[in-house]
Image (cartoon, rainbow, N blue to C red; front, side):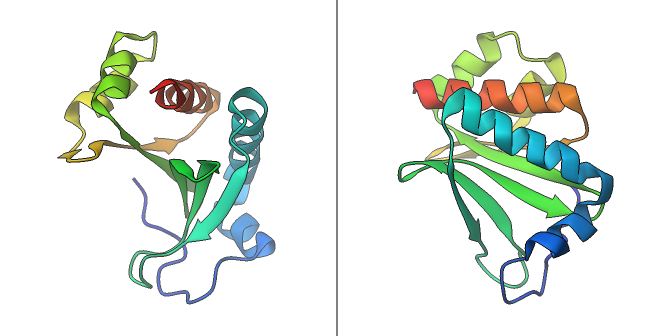
Length: 139
């Protein structure tokens, strides 16, 4: 994944700062957020930063449950999920693109689940992220 564009910033990014950093990827960002809201009812958005060294990420939630994080970079962005065992297995058995399944298989395992991180570079990635979010919501 690309480095976070807001490393060292003490306040959450303003909308115009986000647009400036994402550049042409801003359309993909907006499209992904809109599809997650309309198709999976993921509407709660919170900017979050654990430390200035980590930068800022947009946390997308359903009620109080964290579903995924969007991490803005210069000229693009990445997403991060933590999938529980059942969700990870369902994702492996799904029709997700092979490269996404490989990312899940190679993801670091934590007690709370498997870390899945990927860059979003186009429409196919948006479809995969929406599908993964739907799988996570089932478990």
